[in-house]
Amino acid sequence: MTVHIVLDDFDKLGRAYRETDDEKADLEAIVSNMQVGEYKKPVRVIAFNTSEFWSRQASGQGLAYSGLKMPVVIVARADDRVVDPEALTLEIRHALLKKRLDQGHMVHQTSTAEILSLIYTAEEESARLSPPARQREAREMSTSSRLRS
Image (cartoon, rainbow, N blue to C red; front, side):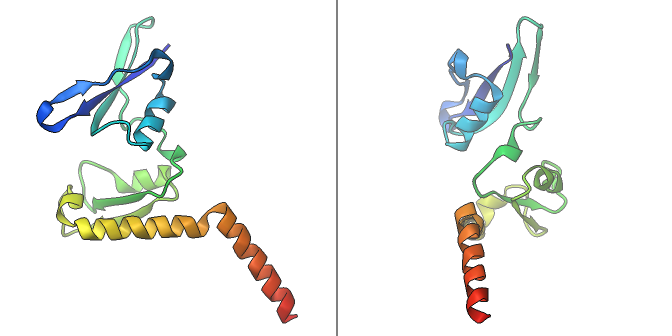
């Protein structure tokens, strides 16, 4: 069985590997925990399998980004050497991508108001395109086209 553990950053208290229930140590559970904010500042995810004698860093390597259901905004410098925004948008197809040339890698710290605005925009777009909203929109269009006929 492959086990995943998270190295979490607790600011001034330092970093520590988080305790994990053995039944909730699979990659899906770790990603789910990240989605709901279970970790303070996850630094990396380590996968290991003692019966097969291996371990590796799992963060950024096949984490189930494509399974994210919430709105996602990717903001990155166009020539960022830390992240590949195009690769992320291929994996998270519903993500809103905003490239910046005038900011560094930590744009969320230097342009907080703009980042919040992008988050609100993504949230509104997600609500507009949610399945119930799309179904209502289709019904309304169908009804209005019948009324015009």
